[in-house]
Image (cartoon, rainbow, N blue to C red; front, side, top):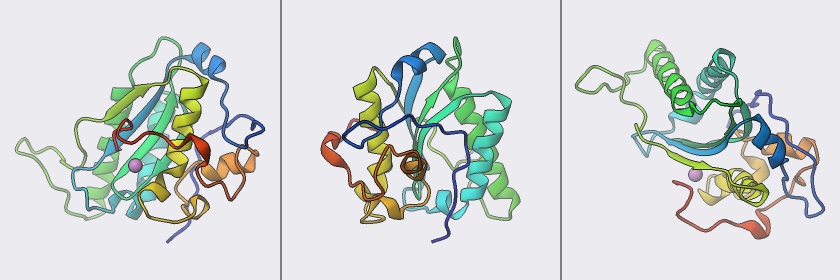
Length: 197
Ligand code: NI
């Protein structure tokens, strides 16, 4: 698989002694709300997101430029992605930003000559309209969701080692020492069924 680098301005905070990612929730809280998302394609057998990873990252960067937000963690799988964002103070419009990302990605795919299915109204029909959103409550909740994101490629059996999945902020967290390169999930393995995927 092609290596890709997620180039967003992701600034994970320093590690704790257990070697898992710790984030300064208080700072997030001052900045604005912090949210976990699961965003899914309609076709659950598709590999569109990793096949067109550059287009997807471009769409995310465009949305950030238009209306800034911080990406705290991100993993892109074949037909869904998980992300944690922090929005600016007083701004709760994550839905509008996701709408912009989805629309731009669909357009760029269609423009590249791939036949993107349209609904009865003629709109691109690539993404599930609804998505999972969870507001991060505190440090522990943040850590659990960051770990969930980084363990996800193993959970979905795309790789057997977390380090082998390129489309993830895991590598950035390793670079700043928040995880060891051979991190394998740890003791905060989340309960099933409460992450939207
Ligand atoms: Ni997943």
